[in-house]
Image (cartoon, rainbow, N blue to C red; front, side):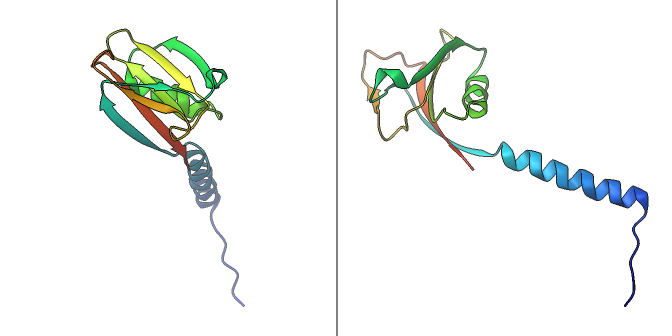
Length: 112
């Protein structure tokens, strides 16, 4: 039986690749983005985790993604308001009406 020896550099490189794979797999998600002119109402008001002001919809998605409880968020591009919810998009209600700002939209996140 032949023994294969890796150089120290190769060992570090392989460990680095495994580490990167581990880190990336922890932060993967799938985001469903709804149409503009929508807002979210959770089944129970206690499901609202937080309301914050952020600069973009991507920042709002990141806020939701790093919170292990967050499943749904809505963002208004005009007011910069980001609301993150614990409830699934299927358990609450996606509101569509003329009274809702056309700058607001609901998104849901599935963490892989």
